[in-house]
Image 1: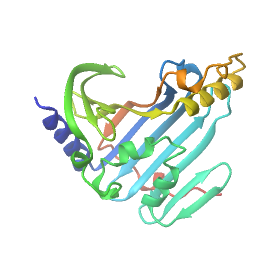
Image 2 (image 1 turned 90 degrees about the vertical axis):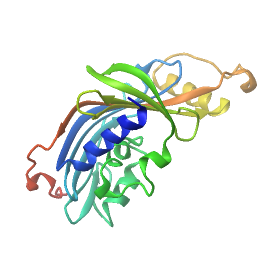
Image 3 (image 1 turned 135 degrees about the horizontal axis):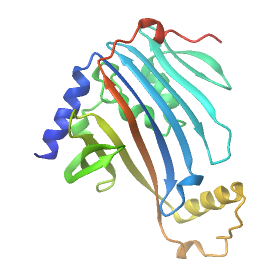
Length: 239
C-alpha cells in the first residue's frame, strides 16, 4: 500500500465520524537529553459534529513544576477557554480559541483538530502541506500496530505519523525543529539548574556546541469514534 492511500483512509475516517474522543500525552524535549526533565502535557479531546468541541489539558514545564489546567471548547454556538489565571473567557470563534492555546499546548490541540473539516482549522488541505510522503514500515505505537509514515513540512521528513493498521486512527505524531547553538544550550542550562543539577556548558564556545533538534511527540493512548456524547458535556464552564 502506498503512503498516500494510508493517509487518505486516515483523513476519510476522521471526516466521516459523527463523534470522536481521545486521551494522551505530549513530550517536548531536546535531542539527546533525558525526557524525565522535559515539558510534559496530558490531554483529552471530545468532538461532536458539527461544532461541539472540548479539549482539556494539564501541563508542566519540568519534572517538579506544578501542573496548570486549561480548557478550550465550544457548546455548539459559543466558543470559550478557561485557565487558572484568567478564568473563563468567551472567544470570538473556536478557531481563535484554539489558535490562542496553540503555544501553551505545544501544538497538540491543532494536531488532531486539523482532521475535522467542519472546524476549518487549516486553510489548505493536509496533502498540500505535507510533501514527500514515505512509508517507513510497520511499528507499534501505544500498543497498536501502525503504519509509520514520514513527510516534509518545513524540513526534509520533519514529521512522522503512526496510523493504526486496523482502523486508520492517528496514534502518534513526532515533529522537530532545529534549535540554534546558543538558544539550545541556554535552554539546557536553565532546565538543569531548575532540576538542581550542577552543569556548566558556558565554558564551551557556541561555535563548538553541537546543533540540537527540539522534538515534540504527541501520543494518543485511547481513541474512540462515534460514541454517544451528550450535549450537556460541552456546556460552558462556570467561573
